[in-house]
Structure formats: structure tokens, C-alpha cells
Image 1 (tube, each protein chain N blue to C red):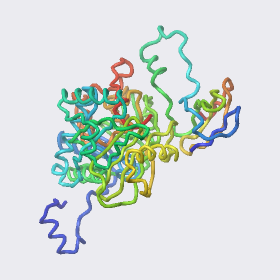
Image 2: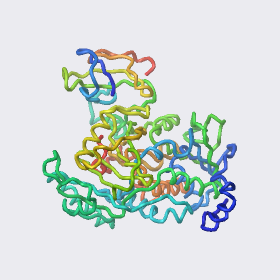
Image 3: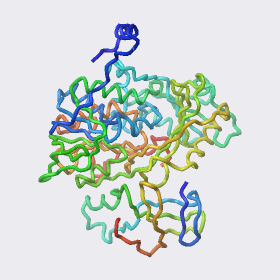
Length: 93
Length: 416
């Protein structure tokens, strides 16, 4: 089980959290203007990196807030945690 | 190569079993092949076998980063069934089932395919409705499946606990009698031996590190053992499909999750069939070696670590013990995880990609083993002709653009 550090509540067991997948996905401002391919990218295509990954977590059974974590998907080790609105360092993504 | 028979067995017994030949050669990679298959698991090896056998394409290499069948082929719970809801899936998985039924004879290798029956439990009214719908859909597609009452399910699997006092009492079940299990390693080895006999080069410890693309066409692969030119490339890399496709500049709608399984200590025959429950998430069978083989769920986060959280295993064992209190004193021996590549609609992607001559067979997610023969058979057709077989034609990468999804999320018992 992962030990996840909520930026608001501190380190807690993974069972308190809900994973929200890739972080930083922005809903297109004008979906009707997109091609089918671009819409597919928004809806279905996800980064699936072997290595550093920016992902969303929700502290569902704690403060209930969403935040961003940077994790290495090979070691499952977390590199940093960021409250919503704070941009993780994009380098090495 | 020796053909296995009672005579070869007797002959080798007389010489103390010291002279059995190797199942396959370990050739040095050639400079180029007509077809290069990336991934030496069951699907990749089956693809190579059917390429050589059915399509007479024998200048083929299978490149495996580690050892044959060391990935998900050796990590799954070996369940074979074809009771999928939609027409496209029923055709694909039952194609595999029909090949399973003759596979040991076809390969001259005992894959220990055992049609002991797959029982899928229903625990509430909705489960029963879905089971009834699936049974009807299967029978319209010529796939055997029947609806049982709870008592009939217990007659088929006497270990089942029908107590009304458990959290999710058993209210009925769907039974596919043709379903069952096969020996996963034997499937990889049998296909490898068969492919090797037909001239396919099986190259282990050969990691693909790059795909060479020129003018929108894939022309070869960079590997840890040098560059290998390829007429066509088939990527059958399971959990690492995103990584390999990324080398060719292709983004796939896949996420890779750890999926765990575990086995108990081996005991005498104590369990007659395969039992699955989607609702409380459990599946269990007993291997011929005597271990209870138990499938757990996926972790909630993407990972390539081949290990998962203990709470996932606990969750499954809680469900197993409610259904089968008989096993409460069993000790678990080993647990592990495989990395499964999950698509948004839980159906595989088999076919062309935006890069010419680079084909993919991926996205089998939590349930690829059952499809191994069919997957290899239709992917061999796709690689030989450059066009999909009618059975895998609906399973394109394009379906995520045009919206013709094949939504089988309910078909897998695995919680995801």
C-alpha cells in the first residue's frame, strides 16, 4: 500500500485516497470546434509513462480535496506533492 | 525435433530421459526478417506459430526482453471462457475457445486444457438480470452458457456457501461448461516449440530499444542485440505496449495497472471448477498441482512495478472466504502482479496503426490469457495480409475516434 502525503493532512494510507489519473488535462474551451481525433485525445488518450508521472489524487476519506502528485511508475516512489493550483516542475516529465 | 508420442516417451525412458532435445533453438538474430514480433508471451508466440503454419510466412523473429512467457503469460490465473456480451467479443473469444479445444493435438504438446466449467455468480436481482441477458446473448451467438439457480450452482460446485447470512448471498449463477483452465507456461512453450519447428527464430534476452521509422513506415527495430530490419512489425508487448508504441511515435489509449494473483499451498483435489464473482470480486480455481489459484483486482494507479497493495489481496480473500469458508485455514504461498494494459472500453486493440507496417495487438487488460490462440490466429492474418481478419476488424485503434466502442467493462470480474 502506498503512503501518500496529502498537502493538507500529511501522510496517510492509500486507502483514504482515490486516484484520478493523469494530472493537468484541460477540457477544450470549444469542443465543437475540435476534430474527432483531437476530441479522442482529450477523452481517451492518456500518458502511460514508464517513469515520472504527474497524477491527481483525491483525499476522499480525509479533507476531500484534490491535489497533484509526482510519482515514478517504476518504483512507485512519490517525488513531490502539490496542492491544487500549484504547478509541479515540468522538467523531467 | 522429436515428436512427442508414447513411442518417443518409451524410447527416452530407456535412455534415462537424458536425450530429450531442446524445445527450441537459441539463434543469433539475423540482419532482417519479413516479420518481427515484439514480445515473447503467449500472444506473440501464437502469432508467430500461425504466421508460419497458416500463412507460410516463416522468416519471422520473436523478440523477447526477458524469457518466454515471463510476463503476463506466466502471471495470470489461466481461466479460459468466451461468455462475452457483445457480438464482436463473442466472435473473438469463442474463436479462441474453438482453437483451445484442439490445441494440444495441434501443437503435439499438452497444454492441459481442462473444460471444467466456469461459474459466474449472481448476488442480487441486478446480477441475475445481467446474467440472464448475457446467457441469452451468448446463446444467440452460439456460445454455450446457462443460467443456474443457487441450488443448481451448489450441485455443480458443492463447496459453495449458500448461507443467507453472508453479506452477498448467492442467488444464482451463469455456467459456461466449455470454459475452464489451461497450463499457462505450457501454452507459451507449446507455441514456441511449434513456431521454432516451422523456422521461426525465437530470440530471448533481446530488448527492443527503438523503432526505426522512415517516411511514415516502420522499417526495423533497434535492440539490445543490434539493429534488425523488418518488413512488418507486430507489437505484442502487453503492459509495455505504450512504451514500445511510443518508440514509433504512437500514443495509445492505454493505461497500465498492476493486477495481482496469488496461490495457496498445494492440497489434494478440493475444488471442481472455476468460480468468479463480479460483484464481490473473487475468482478461484485449483491448479493441477493442487494450489488454489486466486485472482485479485487491479491497483487504482498506473504502475510498471509488478507488485501491488496488500489491501487488494485482502479484499479478494475476504470475498473468497465468505463464499468458501472451507478454505479459511488455507495458507497462501505466493503472490505477484503483472502489468495489464487497459483500454477505455476494456476490449483489445488488434490491427493497424498510423505508422505503416507497424501493427499492434494490445489492450487485453485483465483478461488476455483466454484469448491467446484466437488473438495469435487473427493477428497472424493481419500481419500476413496487412489487413485485419474479419474477426478482429472491429477491434481497431480507430474505434476511439469514430465512437464504435465495444464496451465489455462488465465482462471482466476484475475491479477496475
